[in-house]
Image (tube, rainbow, N blue to C red; front, side):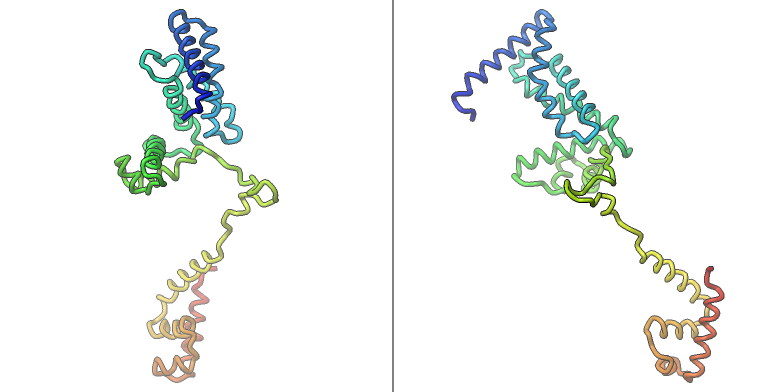
Length: 253
């Protein structure tokens, strides 16, 4: 509740706003409209700051100002609603429409773009109702979509903003966001090599395949391999040598 000392001032401002709207509606006074714009322009800029990202500042503030003008034109004082209650959703609607239609740096399906604000509204409503952050399942039930759709919408919510890899991670320091990106994983080369070896092994006779696997997968000695396959150690040595020679000849260059 507002302090008692502020109530007369607030009521006085409300009467001033009502008088300006009455003057603008009845006489089309451009001066009254200008005063309304100047009075509520700070509100529009405040709402725009929720969506400001670097070079978009001027564009978003202009869109918010356009939303304010539309709110002034559409507002009907006779309905008994405070102007701010009408203006806020009108201004935010213009800003969100700007990002939906013009501001997406990465193109995503229109259905996902339209779901993003629904998910945001449902999340805000459920936070107020539950007193905590809702789960994806709860948001999905509220929006009557699947959990996968909610997760996709949340992941796409920032697609209209591009970030520079050169931007510093912290205000002080030389590390950039690009330094945190993943590097080439040497494990990929090992996977490719393993696939090549598996393909080449299938070209060997079954006995030679078993000997090679016992030697290099189970790390057995030639004597231990000889005991497993029932051959002499010398025979195993010759078969292993011939198998490795064949593999080397067939291996990709």
